[in-house]
Length: 126
Ligand SMILES: [Zn+2]
Image (cartoon, rainbow, N blue to C red; front, side, top):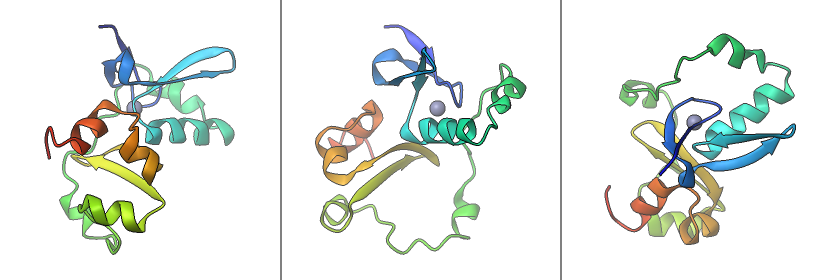
């Protein structure tokens, strides 16, 4: 199976789990909607020279997030999947502090775009 690098964070994943998008005639790959979103945001603000400066560095997911999480109001933040499907229009899935996928709740649970999300939903881990 061929591996490709995410065009935002530069982490490498199997090609079949990546979000593929053609931007300015060039094929780009993103490991999650978060990376795709940040890429578009930087580009739309004319800040895409960030990627030139980044060079070959990889944007590793944060390892220690527990302390930071305490700074946020986590009302409406739940791990109960039934509750999520009942009350929310959109779901974002984070794993080990890394943003994995954002999507409309129904679409996310029925047809997740990222393999990790699918494995979580189907109870393979978590
Ligand atoms: Zn990425």
